[in-house]
Image (cartoon, rainbow, N blue to C red; front, side, top):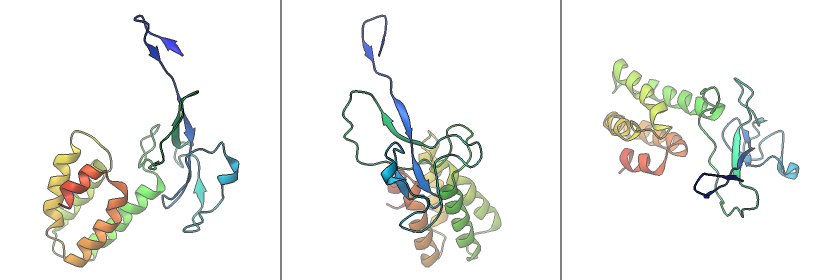
Length: 170
């Protein structure tokens, strides 16, 4: 523990390493428990990883604070590596799937498709620009045929926050 000049206790913790399959299914958010580890995902059979494929930095899992009871039950895999900023395989796969869906329709112009794809990385993270970008993206979503729009919504909802979902899909 560290103490500040005002005698407030500052508790320091560490991120544990997570194991996630290349499709984004969380195997464990704490690789300290080896009984939960697996080479392949039990849901989709994809290979699992514990480090960024670009820079080999461990994937951040649960945040652990010694001597503090952890009651958190949910862990969401990160979209991007905190060290190099590159997308994880599940993020790349989502972007590629949406790109394929957009190529299957002709309601959006090529410029609109490029805008659509450029907006996605912004809404995958929480930044001051995310909500404004989500509103712009909603306008493009409204131009999509219902079938393509529905599939795109299904692909995208796993990687965006609840606040962005409310803006995109009111």
